[in-house]
Length: 233
Image 1 (cartoon, rainbow, N blue to C red):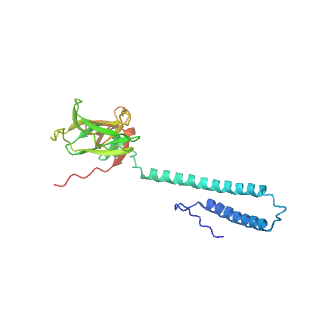
Image 2 (image 1 turned 30 degrees about the vertical axis):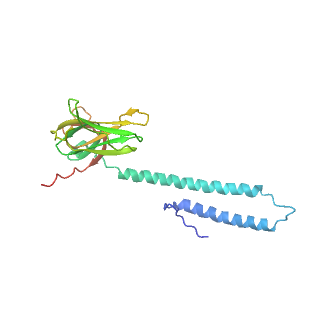
Image 3 (image 1 turned 30 degrees about the horizontal axis):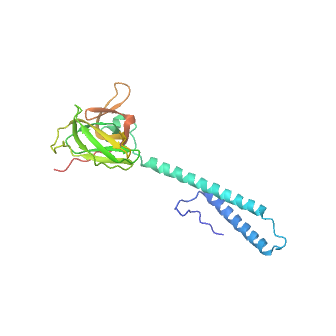
């Protein structure tokens, strides 16, 4: 009997799992052939006791389920490994971050005059999400209440203007996200801000990365990437 050790989903079984599956399939086929033959030739007035056959069928089913469970476990391990491989490599030394763009969990960010990409993460879908940018005095500079409301991470681009559409100056700003659910309950999703690392402060014993005029801790970093090239012209 030929057995293909590949599932319909395209995930290959390990060598041991493929051998076990082939063995149980072949044994199951032989057993069913023997059972069918005996049932065809049994005495109608004295039928065979099928209790033992039933127990063996249950046994085969249990073994097949164990093989399937092992396969699913291998798939989960493979998915986790792939996800880890896709994660950005964090630098081995704080100094390696200099010149890199980092994304961190926080609200404060340095605005250079170019449109800023701000992000937030919704643990669950909301009815409405409002994203607000404040200046250092706590005054509202810009706000949008049309931000995405589905669960997950979302980016919102602040063009660097105030409520009237006037360009604002470079400096230190803050972002806040507020989500409202169907019951009217307001929550504040975590916000994510980005910036280029220009220095490292290790004077306190705990390295802090200098991003604009702010300092961020290494454990707040969620992504590291090469900075975008400056606009042409």
